[in-house]
Image (cartoon, rainbow, N blue to C red; front, side):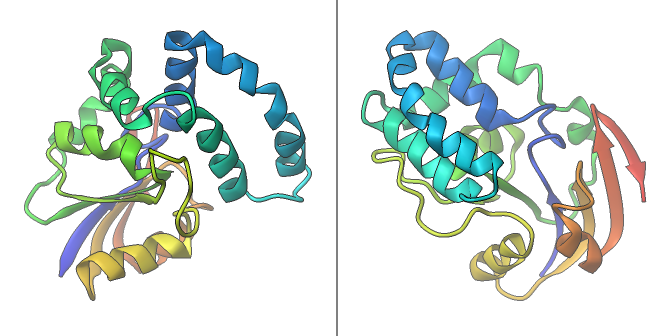
Length: 190
């Protein structure tokens, strides 16, 4: 199967959608703030390299899932005009002659509504149970994106890869025929 692959955060979405989603939830549910100090040791461990991003995300979403319905909040997040305004207008002008895959480290439950809104059928993200906040599997980054695309679509070739990070998406860029760097809606061929 021939596909075009797009990273999401910093590429299609101008910013980090997970950070914005958490902020959105905190604005709507200020009581969540009470659980954040408990994450301080985990945040410090993450910054010091003693804990991975996967573990931190699981702890964060686990605390939130115990208090709010993450799936419902994700739907509301993508209805918010401020969120919609951060979706890159350039994306609508890209070729649609091949299947499009969004491959992101953000949780699939969070991006599902965005993918639908953008008309993208194939979404690959970090697997996270919105009912519990539990991550099932690895953070969907680097080589994991390739493994997960292959798991969902079978063997594939990448015509074009769009990303904001040559480092994070190096494995996909290495196998893409065309490579594009996206920064704040400006697309540049590598």
